[in-house]
Image (cartoon, rainbow, N blue to C red; front, side, top):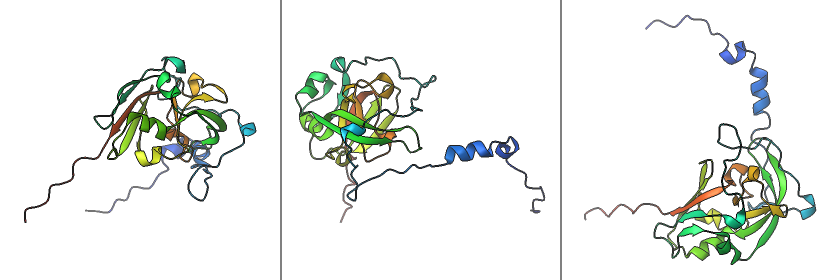
Length: 216
């Protein structure tokens, strides 16, 4: 095969003068995510709480939160434990009210420089919610689905960290729809996309059965 003699040419991005735009988009990515030595998130004083900067990330054509029931007192979230727990069905606020309430202030940082913000969240520990369901020890992971059909899969060991929350208040008020009403997962030691907004479904699972032993 003869060597290619075609001259190298600038890519379409260079030809269209988009290099500067692309570099600007990539500048500062990934953003710094401050963590303590043990991997947990630093906690902030409530006086440091404020807003979350734009742009917010929604997987919808207009980049807006889908129309659902935003009132946390009327939440109806599908919970499927797949036989791995004593309870399943529809999660309502009355179920969460039975659990110890928690208020913490954390930095929410996207992988890009924005969105970001220090926010006070109020809700319950995910570990208390998992205990309420009576999950068996072999339960391995959890999938949480948002109203825009985005989802995250997290090991239960991560979700049982004492800083992980299911929150319905943001800065002492109901979470606004654009920030994830009625219920949002908060994983402060991960980038913000792991703190999935507007939860509609929660499913628990476990790995498949191990391979049977080979014949002797």
